[in-house]
Image 1 (cartoon, one colour):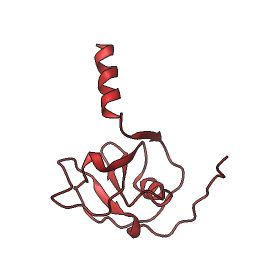
Image 2: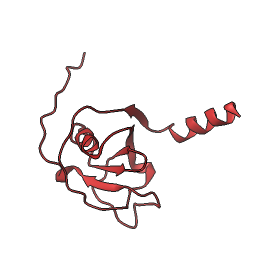
Image 3: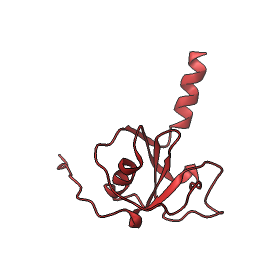
Length: 113
């Protein structure tokens, strides 16, 4: 049983970075309710965040064009698309936030060593 679970987890998260809890917050407007881009367009997956922390994570990442927040799972998906429509969405439900709909935030960056 444990071997099957390990293989399942590895398969689900193989193509994405999985990170944990952000510390900063940002204000935002939701662009689309209950509609998420395709999982294949996701570039990061973060857990145990608030919606404002999810918005901040998008604002802080140059590659982010939009974020999907799933309240039931407290899950934040970072995407490289800023539009959700019938051609690039699936049956997962999230509240989609475009990066341009996030209030300006000051991002504390660390030097790259």
